[in-house]
Length: 485
Image (cartoon, rainbow, N blue to C red; front, side, top):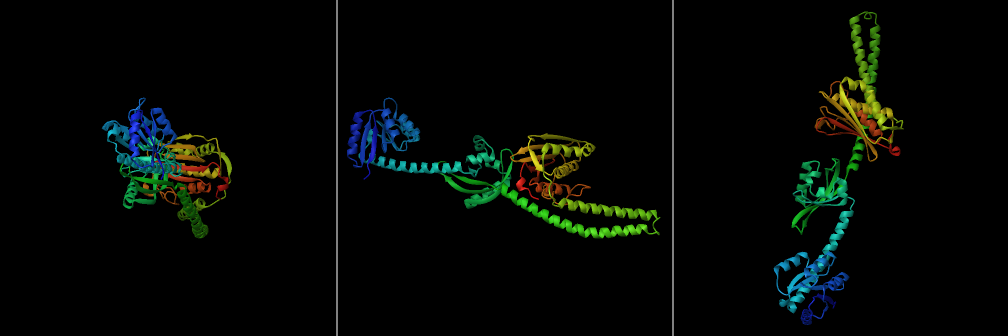
C-alpha cells in the first residue's frame, strides 16, 4: 500500500497532538509530519516533499490564507486543506476561491471525515493536474501552430487567437480580442453561412471564404471548425483553423488566364487568316475597278471606292491589333528602374492628358531597386491602363493618381481615377478581348496589358473603390528563373 505523506502546518503543538490522535484512528496508509511556522511550511511546499498539506488559519507571521495564496502562486499542485478553530463562511469562500481543496473546522473533525477529505482532495488534485497538463499541451500546440487558430462563439465574440493568427490579421492581441468576428469576414453573407453550417453539423471542414486583415488585404481562406463546450463559462465556442489559399487561388487563376491566352492566340491567328484572304481579294478588285476607263474619271464612284478601301484597311488594322494583343512574343529583358519606366510612360501621354485637362499626380516610393523587364512592352501596358483611366472620366475635375511601392518582392503600381468606375457585373469581363463599355474603343488595351504583365510573371487586377477605379499592377523585382516566354 502506497503511503500518503501528510504535513500539518500549525503553530500550536497541542493541535498537532490532537491531529496525530485522529490519524491513529485512520488507515495506516497515512504518515503525518508537522512544522510549526509559516516559513517552514512554505519551504516544505516548495520542495514538494508531501502529498497533502493541512494548514491552520492562524500561523503567527501570516494567515493560512496568505500561505495558501503564496503556495498556489509558486505552482503547488498538491492539495491544501484549510483548518480553523471555528467556522467562518468568509474564510471558507476565500480559501476555496484561491484554490484550497477543502475547508474543515477543527472541533468538528472526526477520523472518517478527515480520511474522506484527504482521499477526495488527492483525487481532485489528480484530475486538476491532468487537466492542467492537457491545457498546457493544447496551449503549446495552439501557440506554435503555423496556421491561425481562432476561438469565438455564435454571437461573434472572440475569446482567443494564437500568435500566427495575430500575425496573419495584423492586429495586436488587445485590439483583436475586442473585435467581433464579423470584422474579419470580407462578406457578411459568408459569415452567416459559415455559422449556419457549423451550428447545423457541429463541425465544418474546408469552408472557403474571403477574410480581411487589419490593413484591408483580402485573403482567400479555408476554414475548418468544430464546436466545443467551454466548461468554465458553460457555453459553446467555435475552434477554427484558418488556412490561407490565396497562393493556390493565384496559381489557379494564372493557369486559367494562360489557358485563355493560348486559346485567344489560336482563335486570333485563325480568324486573321480567314479574314485577310477575302480582304486581299476585295482590295485587289477595288484596284482593278478604280482603273477601269469607264469609271476612272467618275469622281462619285471613285469616292465610294475610296470609302470601301478605307474601311477594308480599318478592318485589316483591327485584325492586326487583335492578333498583336494575343500574340506571345519573346521578351527582351533588361534591368530598369521602375520610376524611369513610369515617368517615360506618363511623358508619352502628355498631350492626351493635357488635352483632356486631367490632373495627374504620382507617389513613387522605394524605387531604388532595378527590375528585370522588357521596357517597351511594360510602357505600352502602362499607357494602355492610363488611357483606360482617361476614357473612364466624363466630368470635371478629372484626376489620375499613380503610386508605386515595394511590397515584399514585388513592385506594386496603382493607377487610380475618379471616373465612372466599373459595374460589378462587368468587373470579371474587362480583360476579355473586345469587351468595352466606352464609345470608339476596341476593347483590346487591357487585354494586351494583362498579357504583357502575365509574360513578366506579374499580374493586373481591378480593385473596388468607392469612387472610380483602381488598377493594381504587380511586377517581380527579380524572378529571372521563373519568367515565362
